[in-house]
Length: 273
Ligand SMILES: Nc1ncnc2c1ncn2[C@@H]1O[C@H](COP(=O)(O)OP(=O)(O)OP(=O)(O)O)[C@@H](O)[C@H]1O
Image 1 (cartoon, rainbow, N blue to C red):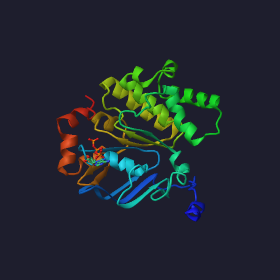
Image 2: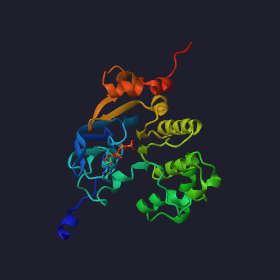
Image 3: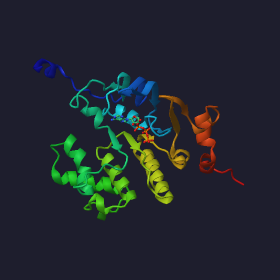
Image 4: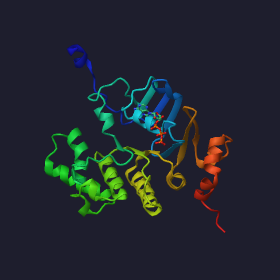
C-alpha cells in the first residue's frame, strides 16, 4: 500500500499540447441494467463553445460528470488537456482539475457561505498557502467578472435571485483562472432577458479569457447565439457534432424535430428583409 502511494505520480499538464481539449473515446456508462452510454466518442476543440443537447435522460450530465471525474465509466478513455484521468487519484490530477471550472445545474452554491466565501472555496482547496486577504481580493475580482455588483459579495445564496445565483456560480467556476469551463444548463429557470444576458456573459468570458466551454443546454436561443458547434446525444452516443447548419443538413428525425420543429424555427436567426 505504502509503495503504491509512493509511486503515484502527479500529472503535470503539457502546456504545449495542441490536440483536443477533451477527447472521449468508446465511453460506456451504466447504472445497474440501464446503459446510458455505449461507444460514445466526442472531441472538443480548444477555444470553442460546444453545446451538448439531447432529450431528457440521454446522459448529458453523466457525460460531463465522467469527464470531470465524478462518475467512473465502465469502459472507454477520457483525456482532458491530453491527459488521461481515469484511475487516477485526486492528488494525481490536481494540476488538471485546477484548469477547469464547473457550474453545476442550479448553481450548487454552499448555502451557509456568502458569495465571496463560495468563490474562495476552490482557491483555499487548491492554494491553501495563499494569504486570506489575497484570497478575498481574488474573490472580489471574480465576482466582478461575473457581472454581479460588489454588494452581492457578502450576501448568502438565499438572498440572491436565480440569475444572480448563476452568476455567483460562474464567479466560483472562474476562481482558479480556468482554461475550460463546464456549464450544465446555465440558462434554465432564467427569464428570456436574463438568459440572453447570461449568454452574452458566457461569450464575453470565452473571448476575453480564451476559454473552451462545454455547455449542456436545452435552450435553442443559446445554441444559436453562442455555440460554435453542437453535439447531439441520442441512442447512447453522440450521433452528430457540427455547426447548426451542418446538423440541419442531416436527416436524423430527432435532429430535424429539434431544430426544425416550431420552437427550433422560432429560435433560428430570421433572414434580413
Ligand atoms: N447516480 C445515478 N444513479 C442511477 N441512475 C443515474 C444516476 N445518474 C444518472 N442516472 C440516470 O442516467 C440517465 C441520464 O441522466 P442525466 O442526468 O445524464 O440525463 P440528462 O441528459 O442530463 O437529462 P436532463 O436533460 O433531464 O437533465 C437518467 O436515466 C438518470 O436517471
